[in-house]
Length: 376
Image 1 (cartoon, rainbow, N blue to C red):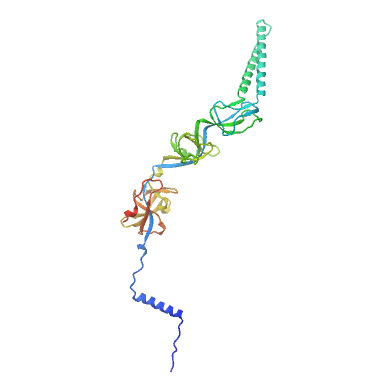
Image 2 (cartoon, rainbow, N blue to C red):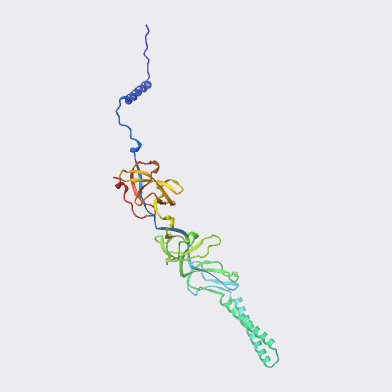
């Protein structure tokens, strides 16, 4: 007779056997509810309402604040600078003496010219008397007359040099730059100071490309943003647009007249915002750029919300123009349609969603009705 010896099982083995038995029992006789399918899952998303595209566009350009008239001043004759009475930043009154040359050489030239004039006039008088007596020819008399006229012209030149040996302020303003010092010998026409004339007011000069200036015109209002101005903003008006581009940069300079403000200083950097009519390709409906997927050439897709079922459907749209904030749709949508703007990667056609918030495209101002309320 053979005896069968019972095999001992360890605790781990027994656990595996019991687990397998329970799994088989659950598969054969369990009556648990089936797991929910993906179609029943609700996805939280953000909704935006489609609005007509803006009829205006915004052009921005960085520029520099300047006095309208920043006049370089200098002497019309060479000489040694005797004095400069103002420093950079000093305010001057109209007619104020700004700088002067050493009058020694200028005065000597004027005296020499006057002495030559007197000599030439005296000689002319003698030649006239001699000509009346027939002792000199007409040619000799004419030479004496020419010498006298030349001496008179020399006096005028020396007098002009003497009068311009001093720099007087043509109007009230502020000394913006000083490029010379007393004792320095300068040539005629050398810049000594630059005067910012307050009578002309202040402007913002901004270089712009030709396609932008074609949409601007003098008299248009401009919003200028300057951190130094209280509130950070100041209203201006286009006063000038260059007729010729800068040869080195190819940009056209636009001048914006600014109202009087004590916070304005020459050299400040600001940003000008020009509100212009929208380009022809901007006609259509504006939607956030984040709402469009599978973009190819001039077409893409959006998820359109059905408020009655709270489900989304993929909708093909035609794209007219796109930038980093929004795009213009020319077909496939109607004003008032609600589209998904976030959470698109989790969605499929027919997915059920729960709107979390409602927002508008970046250039529209009308508030959209809450999509969550419409979905109830």
